[in-house]
Amino acid sequence: MPPSSGGGPPPAVEVRRLQVALGGVPVLTGVELTVAAGEWVTVIGPNGAGKSTLLRAVGGLLPAPGAISLFGTPSEALRRRERARVVATVPQSPVVPPGMAVLDYVLLGRTPYIPPLGRETAADLAAVDDVLGRLDLRGFADRELATLSGGERQRVFLARALAQGATLLLLDEPTSALDIGHQQEVLELVDQLRREHGLTVLATMHDLSIAGEYADRLVLLSAGRVAAVGPPRAVLTEELLAAHYRATVRVVQGEHGPLVVPVRRRHG
Image 1 (tube, rainbow, N blue to C red):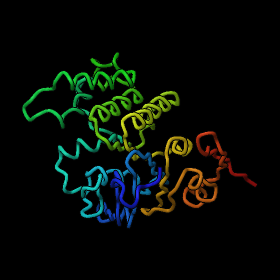
Image 2 (cartoon, rainbow, N blue to C red; image 1 turned 60 degrees about the vertical axis):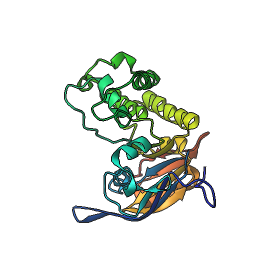
Image 3 (cartoon, rainbow, N blue to C red; image 1 turned 45 degrees about the vertical axis):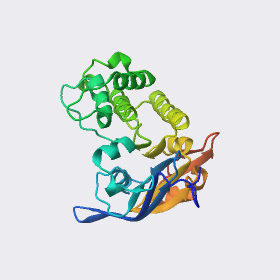
Image 4 (cartoon, rainbow, N blue to C red; image 1 turned 135 degrees about the horizontal axis):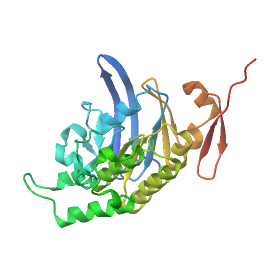
């Protein structure tokens, strides 16, 4: 799905000339990005390219005055509770309160809908139960997060974001701790929810084949700039990956997108 233009609805995400420096070091320099409502865009790039920084800026965790709009509203104009109803983020390493059970953690996703000093409603509990069921987590509801495997925790983090009911989902390496079976389950679920409920997805991924299978468009970040953008077949080319990842790969055209296969370099 290409970005909307003309008199259509505003894009879900619009980034214009984004500059971010961390500790005085430039990380993103002049990044431009548009994500249409209902689109799935995945940001790829080598380590240190600025992928996570870009997601944090879009999610409001880093200041970016005048550079980011969400559904037509300047990001800085959104209050915290308003933003939480629009944007849900699954970071790479969420902070988990010690001793917290899975059910209570996922319920935190309903915080934007619970009045101050109020309690969750039956509707909040039903929303959480539905998400736990979809992610095969009902059997873990009373377990402490600290007792779960990395892959199980990753599904719980996604469950909290989905329980939030936001229309924009930011996923920072959502499959990094998952085995291949759960990778497919999680991404198929996200794609199903996107189609059923009009979710917009902006993700980062290291696995290029998976990125190409699920995204409508890919954005290749390199050294803090957009090096390429377009459908997976246009971005996942042997030439671009060699130039920006310094990798020797073979790209095979699959049914749903290009498959990137590392090729061992010849010696001698």
